[in-house]
Structure formats: C-alpha cells, structure tokens
Amino acid sequence: MGREEPAPMSKVMRSLFLWRKASRRHKDHCSSASCTLDSFCVPRQVSYPLDIIRPACPVRLISANEHSRTWASYMTNSPTLIVMIGLPARGKTYVSKKLTRYLNWIGVPTKVFNLGVYRREAVKSYKSYDFFRHDNEEAMKIRKQCALVALEDVKAYLTEENGQIAVFDATNTTRERRDMILNFAEQNAFKVFFVESVCDDPDVIAANILEVKVSSPDYPERNRENVMEDFLKRIECYKVTYRPLDPDNYDKDLSFIKVINVGQRFLVNRVQDYIQSKIVYYLMNIHVQPRTIYLCRHGESEFNLLGKIGGDSGLSVRGKQFAQALRKFLEEQEITDLKVWTSQLKRTIQTAESLGVPYEQWKILNEIDAGVCEEMTYAEIEKRYPEEFALRDQEKYLYRYPGGESYQDLVQRLEPVIMELERQGNVLVISHQAVMRCLLAYFLDKGADELPYLRCPLHTIFKLTPVAYGCKVETVKLNVEAVNTHRDKPTAAETTLAVRRHPSAASLMLAC
Image (cartoon, rainbow, N blue to C red; front, top):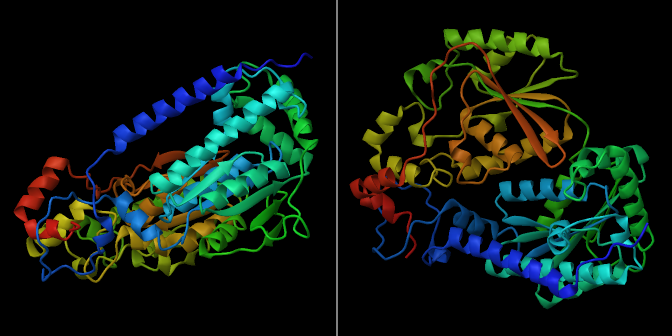
C-alpha cells in the first residue's frame, strides 16, 4: 500500500486558519454583549421585604452562565488543562465528553478540544493508516502543527473566554508530545492533569471500533471489515512510539490517573487540588456496562390539582391510576435487577408502593424547597410577593426562594445521586419536576439557561440509554390524564414588563 500524500503545508494551514477564523467569528457574534461588572454581583439570599437599595447604573442583567462562572471560580484557583493519553479505541473521547458534561453540570465551564477534528480540517480526505506511520515525516509535521493550533485555541478559551477547564482529547502517546504540552501549560500558568486510558482487552477494543469508529468521518461508505482492518493497523502505528506514563521514574512528579481496562483498576498519582480530586472520584464511578435509567415524576398529587407548589400531599385518583399503569409498564419491560429510588415525600412513596417491588428512599431527591412560598399557587405568590415572582422569571436557575433553594442549590444537592447513578445498572428514579429537570440536564447535556424549563410532564417516563458519546432518550406517555404543571420561559417583553412593574426586583439582579 502506497504512502498517503498529505496536502502541502501552506494549504493545510490555510484551511485550519480559515476554519478557526469562521468559528471565532460565529462565537463572537453569538456572545457579543455590553461589559458587566460581575465581580460586584452578590447572589441574593432573601430579598423580601426589600431593604437593599442599589443606585441605578447602565449595566445589563447578568446571565446564568456568567453567574455560574463566578461561582465556579471558587472551585479552581487556576485554569486546568486535562490531557488525555492512550492508544486509539481506548475510550478517550468517551471519557472526555462524559467528564466535560459532568463538570459543566456542576458549574465549572469546560470544553473539549478534539485533535481529530483539527486533523480532519487540515487533511480533508483520509485514505489509510499510512498517514499515522511514525516515519511519514510530512504527515508528522502536519499532526504536530494541528496540535499547536489546538493548544492555541485552548489558551484562548482559558484566558479570554472565561473557561476554567480544557480537555485536550488526543492520543498524546509520546513523551515528546507530553513535554511540549507541559511547557505550554507552564508558560501560561495552567495546571495539568493527565488521564491515561489503558486497555488490553481485545473484546472491548473491537466493540469500541465497531460502535464508534465505523461511523467516523474518516471512513465514509466503507464496510465494517475494511474499517476494522485499517483501524487495527492505525493502532499498530501508534504502538511503535507509545510510552505509557511512568509513575516510578520519568513521570513521578506529574498529576494523573490511569484508568485500566475501563475501570477494573486505577492508579492515581499526586492529586493537587479540589477539582482534580473531584475528577478522580467521578472517573472512578463511571462504567460502560449496558444499562437503562428510567426517570419519572410521582403520580398526579392533590396539590397538583390545586396548582400549589411544594408541600407533602398524597396522590389524586388519577395519580393512583398512574402508579398502577407504571407497574404494568415495568412488568412488560422485563427489566433485570431494577432498582427503584424515591424521595422521602408522600407522593413518590405512594407511587412506588404500587409497584410491588423494594424501593429506596433518598432525602436528597426531595423537591426543591420553595421556602416561604411552599404550598402556595403561582397566583398567590405573585400577589403576596410580587418582587419575588418577578425575580424568579428574570433568572430562574439562580433565583433562590426566601428561606428555600435555587436550581443551582439543587444541582449541588443532587451530585451524590448522579455519582450513584453512574455506578449502578438499571434504575428507576421517581422524583419531582425540579429534581427531574436537574437529572435530565446532566444526562442530556443541557445548560443552566435551559435546565429550569425542561419539560417533565406528569405520567410520562423518560427512558435514558447511555451510548458512545451521549445518551439516547425515549419518552413513554402512559394513558392516564394529568394536569399540566409546566410554565414556559417568559419572553423578553414579558420580563421587561415585570421589571417595569417592580423596579426594585431588577435592582437586585444588577451589578453596579
């Protein structure tokens, strides 16, 4: 087989330059906004009655993403670069995407930089494994240049775009490449944490190739046999120069975790800070075994019928009918070793009791605490606490009920549930609207702006099946009517009108 002839360097780099320029132009267009002094913005605790008056100033309302960045900055004392290491088909991209999803969910702005994307932009057509031979000098130059371009984008993200963590998803199998990355990080005052994925199980490797690589842009319109043959040869090219991390000598001073055979064993070295310890803990909890997670709310409750939030009411007649329908659905699914989790509130327990199976009660699965607004309707809240009502519509993710919780608080409370879900097999979680939104946002990679408005209707089951780079979601609506408890996100005009009606509420969301 002849050696693949890569494009001339000038053409390659011109392609990369134009691609990055277009990407940044699109990003700048989407994110352009007036300057804000978010360092002066103090998250409100209880704002009713309103006893804090701030002078008006020409600044804008602060978005959830900006607040998240401010809060997340307390979790990292300097930007961190996570560097993946490992041969192809060892699950690096799977880990990169999953870890990034988790970190963003807990409020740490994180982004993946996949070197394969840069390489495909530089070399438009992939012909064979020959491009990855260590003695293909021209290709090696292109691959190194792509890495340098990617690292420049990492630098821009961490220094100019308020990013806290960047994940460099590449093989990084040589000491030369890793030393280059370490020098880059030192020059820019970034911390570095390596994640090496080691796997020698041929069945796992073959399954990964067939599940992910067959559909890769590198292999358009190729049959499975040809893809498998070429990709295995590509792996052999990398093996020639692969130098695993050496915890005893050469790499003993580095911070890293080795994940061996998709979580059968771990080797952890010199964890330096809080965020690195969270990363290690998370990686030690995830697994790749097939499983399904079922999420649903309790059956319709008496308070749902009255339009009241919170409280601890029991099920309505239709809510009890849903519980029976849920039992029938689960029996038809014939789920192996299903675990059932509920909150400690009456409506979820009554729903689970009808299933005829053991269940576990979790206090941290209780509904969001509405504080002084518990057991009130939205109309009552608007009448009694108009400023609070306006505040919540302005920034629902960050808004904290007086004496209660915000969605951001709820995400932090639910983190142990996510960790335990990642450890488990098949699980049914019977919870509440706000809780279910937070859990769905994690699995579906939804941001703080979307999370509080995710639709989680009563008497509907969300079936989540983890797949290679995400989560497949199916919804099953059981044939039992229920009230609609969803409130749509207010339009900009509605928010402006609320601010005009209650200007004191707006002052609490401003930085001055």
